[in-house]
Image 1 (tube, rainbow, N blue to C red):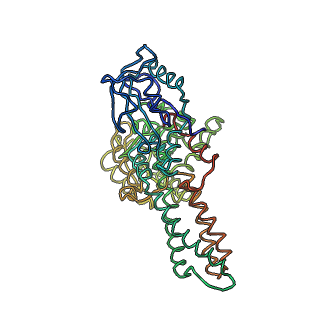
Image 2 (image 1 turned 120 degrees about the vertical axis):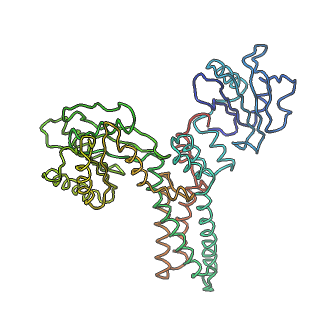
Length: 470
């Protein structure tokens, strides 16, 4: 990308709509806009103050293309830090393309994906982690993912990293200074204070790294696997949760042969429900592949919902004991996963049988139990509440820093690895020159997060995921 050129792009979604916004940014943005815009009041656009809005017409010579509002943002007080003009026009595809083509003929070029935000980063309007949060904010589809993106865009995470990096850099400078006076055998960096700093950095890094488990699922949706034997009502439950006929429901065992996934938002948190093939011994090759996928989805899920047909579970029969054995297998295989045990088709049971069954299932330790009727919807809301309780949103409510970005997570892991090496060096009385090597590496990974250390390939990979116009 050539960043001294003026760029133009549609800043609103493509297609017809009530209005569209076309954005220009660069040192010729106001000049280009002035050439094609005629104010109804006769004012010259380039002579107007920043952050003002003007009604007028975009013209191609004598031909009027549209009546628009032109908004001026003069550098450095704009999103990109450059001169920016935005035309709010009618949302016709034809009008949008005519205005963009007119700007191109006057010397602008089409913006590439994320180039407006890239310029904001290069001009110091935001750091790299904040720029990445812009893309997350645009992609957010739940209250939780939106709040995480807002927190990061406001700079909470990056300011924490910058502060740690600055303190570490100060000590690194003192240790580097000691190397210049090696023959005098002097210490400029107080080792006790340095030890306290390393301990604090280690604590903060471990907290940020641990937060990624929560942040990642809140950002991308929490996967919930619905499992059980054939014909226990897994597909009916999925349809009840989604409030639509998403999965085929049939009395024929083995109807679901592949996984079916869909998402809903519960209490501001996205959940991705996965209806799986019923688990049983089968000679059917296709059904067998579906069952294999069931176990794969259980591996990937954050929460497992285990269904049984309550009409087949009576306290006096062996069925409930067999069911408990199956539950124990799942718990032993995935001890860290929250498990919800559901006795479905509860609408077909008497109240006394329900009470007995509830007591029997509640004896299973380390899991939540619920009697439910997916067909009538009885108990579905209770299940949603129970699933929401599994989500650790305390950090979100308290506005704590939560890591959601895989690149940041990887850099934090590498930074922690180098900090632990520094700790080992301090414990063993390592010389300043060797300590300095590990400190420099830790500083490098801190800088990678905020963009103080970056390269064209890294920036290209990040901003390629943005939409054009942002």
